[in-house]
Length: 168
Image (cartoon, rainbow, N blue to C red; front, side, top):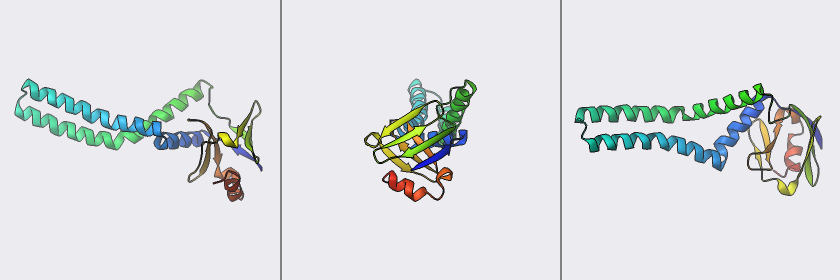
């Protein structure tokens, strides 16, 4: 089965968001970001308490830091998304996009072949680590952070055949 895919910057962003928020490494990073700020603020308060800071000032700081922690928990995901978007825009500005805009994908019995004007990537089916069927995409992971991105808009009418061919 052969089909053409056209990957946009938005497709690549959504893949990175999905990967970041669903992979083990991404989840660990987010957990670390979520926990680092409260631990740091708690350490500051414990230090203030040990130094003998005025009780009124201590409770003022506790309230302030609690509010700050709640705000941080709310904005950590958008901050991470902004960071990903910024990194991709910088790569684009440098002319080093890690994806091909136009490609032809062929799903064979024993492998997947992604062909572009300048290269051809053959992925044996045994090397496929995971196939993720999300809302608008199918991601075929063949490395820790590498995947073939298949937008469902490019396989309209063939979606079920592609899923069967990928053994979903």
